Every structure is written in structure tokens, then in C-alpha cells.
Image (tube, rainbow, N blue to C red; front, side, top):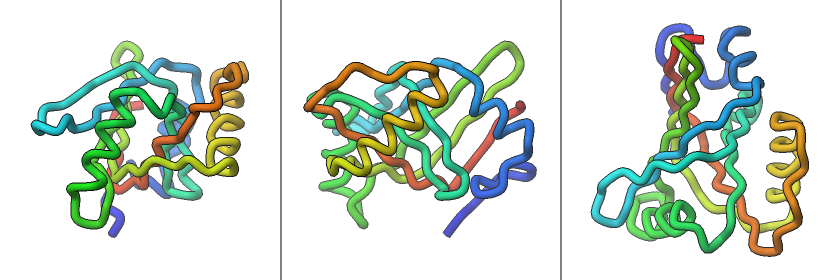
Length: 143
């Protein structure tokens, strides 16, 4: 089920909200540690409202990926509840949803291409690259 806050439907964002997510910003990803406490790290995020997804590329050995994998193993439905956020001055935006880790070449290539489009650079090759793919169900913010 998709849930949204007034004015911020994850599948049909306002033009201002979507434009803010297309600007180049460092974001944060919040994942649950095994003890339930939040783990917050800076990341690059891409937002694909057409698919209802946000994507974060990462190394498969990173703590954020280990947190998502651990939550996937213990959560009903096999996914981890996470949030991504960005801010600039008084503007801010948060996307929330359930994350999984994708390792297949097509998913990684898609995420790298979207990252390159948003951030203006192609990340260096990394054979250990994976994608934290977030199926979005909530959007908040002031863009």
C-alpha cells in the first residue's frame, strides 16, 4: 500500500519536490542497526517516482548494506524500513520505504546510470558494488 503526506505523493510528486530531488545534494540514508538504533550516513540518492523507488549505490561490505541485509533476514516480508533525506537551507525532503539489496548487473547498472545523471559523474568501477533499492511509501518535506 502506498501512503503519502498531503502534497507529496511518492508516485506523483509536485514539480518542486521532484526538481529538488533532481538537484545535486548530498543526502543521508538511515538504516536500522541490529539493536534497533538508527545508523545515519551520507550517500548519493536517486529518486524514480515512476517506479516508486529510491536507489543508493554502495559497496557490498559497507555497514549500511550489512544493516539492510540483517533487517531483511529478520523482518516479515524480507525488507528493511529505511529513510533517505536531503536538505538545503529551509528546503528539505525525506523519502521512506522498505529496502532490499540488489546485486544483479542490470539493477546495479541502472542505479549507476541514474547516479551519473543526478551527480554529473560516473562512479569508478567497483566489482563489489550493490544497490540499496527502496520501495517508497512515504514522502515528506518542504521543497
